[in-house]
Amino acid sequence: MKRAKEERPEMKKIGFIGTGSLGSMLIRGFVRNGVIGPENINVINRSPEKPLRLKEEGFSLRIYSNYRELINDSEIIFICVKPNDLPQVLERTGRVFPQTKLVVSTLLAPSLSDLEQIIDGKLIRIYPSVTQSTGRGVTIVTWGQAIGNQDRTVFLPYLNALGKYYVLPENLYRAAGDITSCGPAFMAAMVGALAEEGIKHGISPEIAGEMAVETMLGTALLLLERKLTFSELISQVATPGGCTAEGLKILEKSLPGIMDEIYEATCNRQEAVSESVRKALSH
Ligand SMILES: NC(=O)C1=CN([C@@H]2O[C@H](COP(=O)(O)OP(=O)(O)OC[C@H]3O[C@@H](n4cnc5c(N)ncnc54)[C@H](OP(=O)(O)O)[C@@H]3O)[C@@H](O)[C@H]2O)C=CC1
Ligand SMILES: O=C(O)[C@@H]1CCC=N1
Image (cartoon, rainbow, N blue to C red; front, side, top):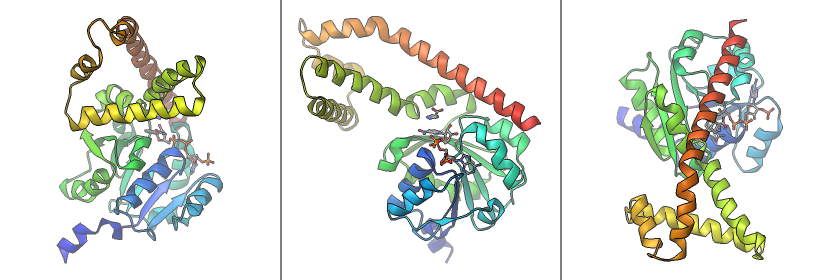
């Protein structure tokens, strides 16, 4: 009996507060990978459009307007609102969550250690990525102090359903999150710029886009399936004396500096958002 329960995490009712990009991604990823049954999704969102869009996609959500009811009816609650909306959510949920529930923050800020000063409950922090609705991508996870082995066992199927996961301390969230969570946007911007250059020189936008995406996919598969390192792949492409090597010289000059600037900018933003939420929650 116990074994059957462990094998069927989809029997649990799961609540989502916020069904924007990330909340929707989690719902799609969990259902696609069979860890949530279609009848077991409880949601609450500020405005009705996004849950209705998910319903149109075929998800049979139970849509709530009362936060305490959603919490009572859910065994795991994912909070997927923007950091500045957290104070309003906590006004409605209260700050004490039953010890029988897992409360999962997906927020850029506050950190889990800050959240543990504010919320009484079994807390987990995850930092996922929109790519995970495809079953591929990376979640970063940190267990809260109240989380025990049994809680981890309950939660692991959900992490596994989203692709790979890494348990990391919070001081590495920015370095890791720039790769895994902001990464899809950064990679799309870079690949899009490659396509844009082709468009500038006469290739149709549709064809340039397809070329870029197919090449990105093939590059990922080479790295993954043939287990090439980045520099091995680069040297397979860059024929000595050829044109790739010339292009690479330009990237090598500029990219490390740009990446340092990006890291500094994302750290500064995370700190500013943390500070603003900290202030709002102390009122
Ligand atoms: N997008 C990503 O790739 C990642 C996002 N995150 C984090 O996930 C969180 C959500 O991000 P994302 O999904 O991109 O943001 P979105 O703006 O797409 O979604 C936020 C959702 O929260 C809803 N919302 C706002 N206030 C409330 C409230 N009081 N009660 C219920 N729902 C509410 C909004 O409703 P409405 O429809 O009215 O706007 C909206 O649907 C953020 O904290 C972000 O840092 C983390 C990793 C990756
Ligand atoms: O841009 C953001 O703040 C969120 C967190 C990582 C991806 N999206």
